[in-house]
Image (cartoon, rainbow, N blue to C red; front, top):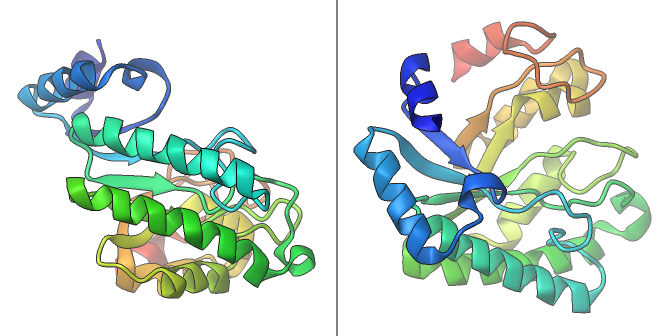
Length: 222
């Protein structure tokens, strides 16, 4: 059904997600990837787990939890690679209440860096890339909501397989009229985009052009 919908809509690829059809064994995922590729659909990108504020938080301050996160991310890197994915999109944090201005950017980055380096090392065997996605601000200082956070994470973990994934909707909420600033900060190391729009107040995932994102500037530069 998914293949039929994509072909009828003119899509040539999908981004995988840990839920739904991808929650299968390695052998089943290998077959699934072949089925999609035979239908002319790519599964090049995969959104690594991002919904659980504890089990999916690569920057958790509790080391016991962070090591569990490492194991979970390695599992999904292997699973998504079996399906044919080459890029894993990851949120720098899944916590909404962290404020790096209070907790300390260095303190949180130390945890995020350890997890990121583990993912990069593990992914090397699959030729797998890790793409850090810019975040919504929530309380105002969430890791990844500021350009300096993203650049800091990149510089701390430089690797040929490390880059960024720009979410245009997130950048509009986080930066307002300077939404293009996120692109300017990340453009040298971009692996892809999540193209979404909103009114600037919340991440409503509107169709591009239905909100206030600066698409004219974006497409002139990109």
